[in-house]
Image 1: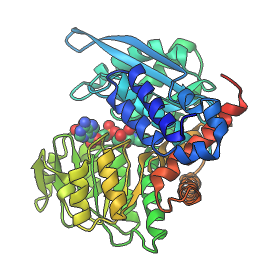
Image 2: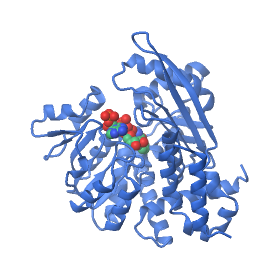
Image 3: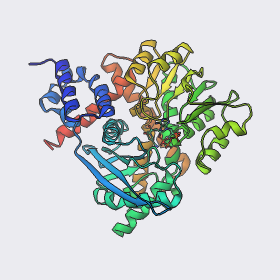
Image 4: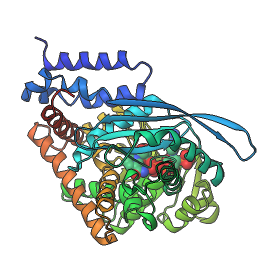
Length: 448
Ligand code: NDP
């Protein structure tokens, strides 16, 4: 009989061999697998029923052609993906990413993470993810609409409120969700609000969904600080990105008395010693869809650094909220040397494995994405509840539900880490708690 550790290593090798070239997926699997040795020792039935092998294999993977025409009449062919990873706990649930870097390995890493994240919320949602290598940057509204319509013309047959419920992610916000829903409605003839989340509250969306990932991430970090008898009040913070997650992370940090001094986009970062002017950022990013450089053109005391290293800006709280692997070992060492106390991952897998090790060894409170950014999908599940009951809740009530869910996610990770003899290690706590919930549901459903 092999030991749990040998068994885990062999499962990981099989995942690599069966999914060649999908590095991000391998990385996400490895991170979870490395936490599971004590789980297999405590629950030998999971090994006997091959729960890890089953969880690492998506239930279904769909790849499709997305042809569309630009404003000059030129035809473009993109590739669309929907990976329906695991539906043991509920319908597949997870966003769509439109970014030129998208390929199957990225969608699979995101879908895999989503399974555990959704389990951690305690809500009845399975995990999935989708997207395309389409680049919305510089495209007109009409081009984005035609792309979304073509994308949905294939995807509509694979989704539904009881089957698979997509939402937004990088490059997919309220505008795109609107075009996608419009095409779904046209193709099916059904006003099936629950088929997509992240909708505009004017036609079936939930209040707080737009703010939820960022707000939730800050609630999680605040809970980590409270567990150390500290709080967000007065903290100097750095938030990477300037998209949906970053903007509402900044907003909640400011509401809780912290000060965000830097944010970025893929071209560079801005530093504003007095604290970022969020109204200006929203105007530049949400209304005008311009580059973050425009911030420094307007606020004269702010400094713009093209292609610079945002993690060199001294801070007590760092919240990577742009993309995967944006914070590596060297960045982590710089943050620790500058006195960083807490890191909360607003993005999915933004810290490399070596970076995570640096934070854990230095005793930094480290919130992994699958716990810290779970507020977005949790509020999507609240949107599904409202759609199913044809109701709409107030902002205050919905935000209190979000805050309570995030306190619950924090408690689950904290208690699980303690129970498995790694107190304060939220990575282990999140991986183990998420895994056990999914594995128990799959066991109960039989060999499916
Ligand atoms: P947006 O598209 O709204 O914003 C993404 C931001 O990240 C932009 O500022 C973008 O800059 C920057 N960015 C994207 N790709 C890169 C890259 N390769 N290098 C450097 N910067 C990059 O996306 P979201 O805010 O929705 O998503 C951000 C992260 O949060 C992602 O990891 C996503 O998976 C995760 N997440 C999102 C949730 C949501 O509800 N939206 C829920 C949970 C997690 P630029 O404009 O220059 O590309």
